[in-house]
Image 1 (cartoon, rainbow, N blue to C red):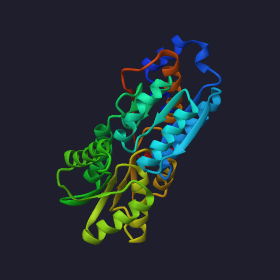
Image 2: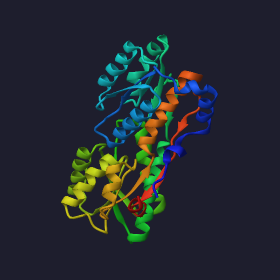
Image 3: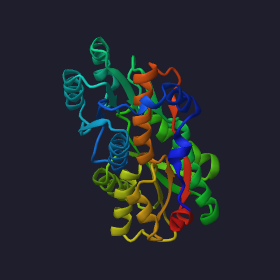
Image 4: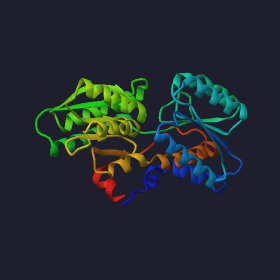
Length: 309
């Protein structure tokens, strides 16, 4: 059964803020600019689609800019949004420190700023998840699979993204989840990868140095998708191996339905998250800064779950 994660995502505090704002919360003529971290990542594609869909439903003008994992490109996008005089700037920052000096410029023009995924100090709101718990959930899933399908030591690799501080915690959660659930797991490699292309290359490098690796877990589905293709190309897409990602993107769920080595992901409903971005932006305009984090919930998705979708 397909879960309506958007209903789970929307926190009570935000619901109350929107209720207090009244019918005008569905305000026309609002303009919101979203500087997305990287549209080469299927997760952010889905977030952007949800954002545009949610904005259209509420007569809000939505502008999306692809930062392409480049801090200077994102700075230019945010500066352009300030010049345009949008009502709210949403940013999933490539480098929070690069965006931080622009917060005052936005505030001086009466523009609210919402951080998504990572916090930019000074933002009026922060829509996020607990990064360590997110990784821990994915790691436990991999460990549970090992408990059922392995005996003795098993070599494991992790695809991480050490350039982003919060993602380090996510990768640590992956490692701890596996070790906690299956203590005989031996983590032999950690390689950076966050797109299908880099995931494929990282998996190739890992397998060349560690041909006995049976499990690769990644900090997102994008990197895991690349690792899965490498497993297929090297004859490892079998019942003895495990690929796990995070985000439950449509592409990942489709690969899980192939009944190969792609076996686990964690649903944070990126499309619903994009719609939640719209609701949070409305709340900022109508009721001012939101002190508490707007938290995204996490739902484990096994291969068996994927086959039911």
